[in-house]
Length: 149
Image (tube, rainbow, N blue to C red; front, top):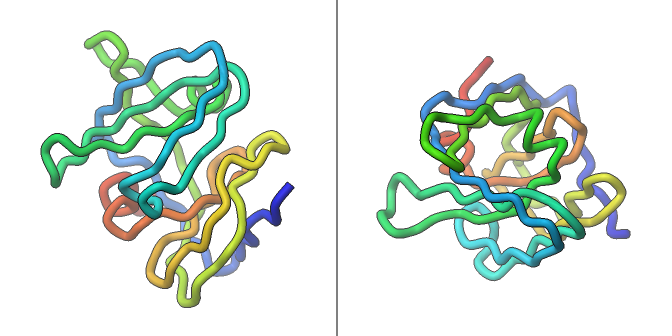
């Protein structure tokens, strides 16, 4: 297992999901590899072992672009509410986060499994999810997803 990102809670603020970002989700009964293009470096991979949800978020700034990634079933169901349209959801959660002042290398680890390893650049946000996993996202993606709680 790779080294998890260290998270400095003393530097973090509390943020909540913005209400308006619709996402699509589909149950996937087996594992998958996702290649990131928006808030991860292009070509960065996320490995999901076993059953999970595949989540697709359209990029509001670039028509035809989207982010795709996997989320464990219990985490997805705890953090999302269904909308009227089939397979559409809205994320509802609180996170702790802060903006990096120096690059940071590490891994996002969920349930003891490494999902992704990379260097997060200066200016990106380090986000601690409700169940404790830590990930980095770009300033643009952070502003699109979160607002102060």
